[in-house]
Length: 129
Image 1 (cartoon, rainbow, N blue to C red):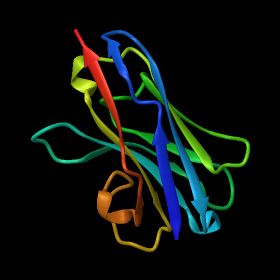
Image 2 (tube, rainbow, N blue to C red; image 1 turned 90 degrees about the horizontal axis):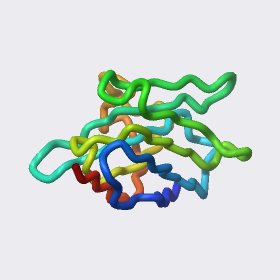
Image 3 (cartoon, rainbow, N blue to C red; image 1 turned 180 degrees about the horizontal axis):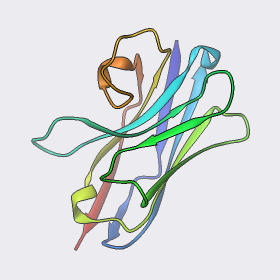
């Protein structure tokens, strides 16, 4: 089992920045992928950033909607995942979720929620214009 706890959500003005954190505990050696997802009211949960954390070098993935604005990084122990969000827009307003996967579930892409076994409870990000 893996336990995930997100933090760092807040209310900011458009153009501002936030850094979200995701702390993983438990059987973290089984994690090969971690991702950030967000869900706005009335919309489906969407993945937008992911990182391969298995053996070898880490590899990051970003959708076009956040590329150049959001950046993933890991803590020293690789059990903490950070999401630096810059140039925030009102369209970024959502509940943000951290997820972790072992790589054993089938998925269409690294942004597919079905590919992740473990989820945090979410942290709210609100961007006002």
